[in-house]
Image 1 (tube, rainbow, N blue to C red):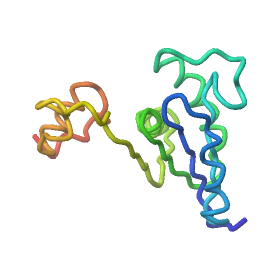
Image 2 (spheres, one colour):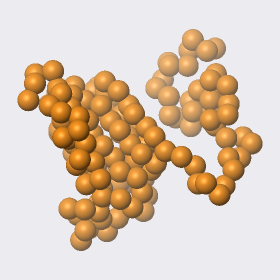
Image 3 (cartoon, helix red, strand yellow):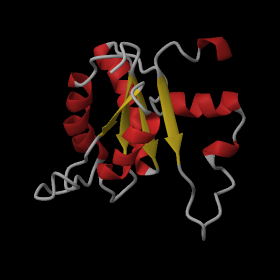
Length: 147
């Protein structure tokens, strides 16, 4: 393993096991340490009941990710995993003063539903940041340049 490797925490989409990311380790090589994050009730934890709410789920997952930060790290999540990856990145920064090298998110809307007219993705950047700030999803002071 290289001294310049990055640990990539991979968060699965809703209902999936983190095992879907195991093939990535070979594909990405030694410069990326692929670390699938298994959620309660999935994969290695089938006897544990899946969490139905975000806060208890994060309370279980964040300490694991925090302990595994032995090198520079990044997070990747798909679908529901994207939301988790974002929340984990934000809380690691705010609570542990640990900043991810990168945050990668992916996903797509449900094919048979159109996005509502007021969808956040359709807003200008400044308005999107203001709304996220009102929801407590932007670190304090980050919006100051917009004011």
